[in-house]
Length: 264
Ligand code: DGL
Image (cartoon, rainbow, N blue to C red; front, side, top):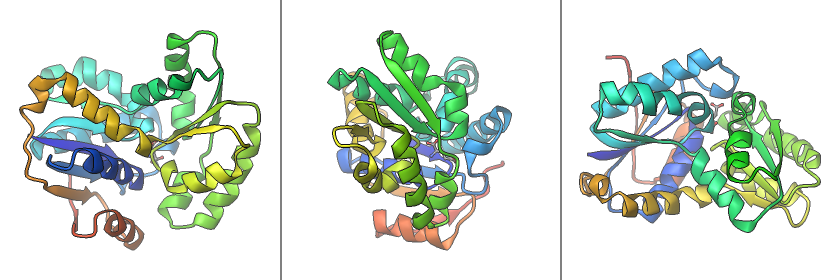
């Protein structure tokens, strides 16, 4: 069985890269639902439907452990998938998200005031606020949606992404840590670090998910022993485009990207 990774687009590729760097011996299938992005602007029903389709697709690709490398899909679909869908559809498959590992990481430095920059749908779900406050009810949490960033990053319009990054950074002036609650934002993290006030720790998922997955596999030997180790990486998308190819090539130089139809 392989490790499946899913996102709407480029963000999940960055997280796949982090997994491969930490755990290079495993086999990975990355699926990006580029045809339907941005998820952050879709309804919960749409995101749930896209996510279920993607999970079914990755299961068909022989993935036994699937990481939803998308905060939006995690916030809307993960609980349903874990509690309802997977137990009847594929009880041996494990599906994980990105929110809990990120919250754990953000709390490691004893921050008291934490900002969240995320898609509109993730902010609407308040998943970060809820999970942070569960672990520390005394925190102050500030959530801001940044709907312009994913489309700008996907369209290779970094001038626009940087302009908005600067505007959002100004609104987080009194926090200790800023969680980048969208897997696309690691692609502009250098800019965000530059424009955020000195001393604010930027929690970026590409820097934490690799070690969190390694730690998970150490704690779940029963899953680890089922995973194949041939160093194969597949990158599949529902709609290919030149910018996507370019970024994918820069992250995985020897890999070709395949456009696929997910519906069976
Ligand atoms: N990268 C995804 C996330 O982490 C979402 C991007 C989108 O809006 O499609 O939320």
